[in-house]
Length: 87
Image (cartoon, rainbow, N blue to C red; front, side, top):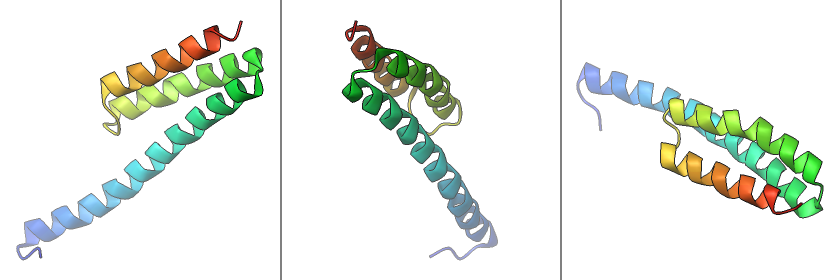
């Protein structure tokens, strides 16, 4: 348990950041799910549009420190190859 004032403050800050990061991660997952659904539906135009919407959101997660750069690149790469394979 935090005893010093600085440790108590860090706990408060951590709780706030955790909430923000949860929201960001959830938002990224939502965009990924939209791409997955478009791919499953077989609509290449919708999948391409969904991927273009998801890509900046995924990279924003990298700049905010929610996900690692390589993880984001891997996700974008695999999704784009799947969208391209629909043709």
